[in-house]
Length: 73
Image (cartoon, one colour):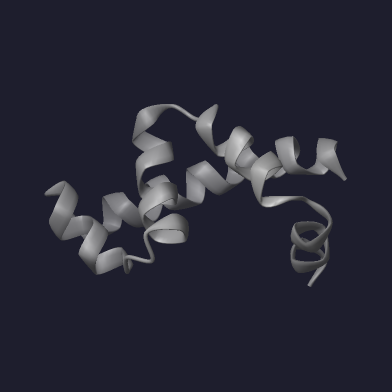
């Protein structure tokens, strides 16, 4: 998968910097999922949000991060 190859080229520090540029509603689920190792269900419960909202925010966060990550490669 091309995204996997890209992730190996980007340092964790660079990735964290890009994640921090996201608006809170997108940054929080990404942070909880990738840095705190919570499941989507755990994030939904912790955030008091429906699972569908968490999934949507994760998808939108990834969409916003993709061009930022490509600029690092």
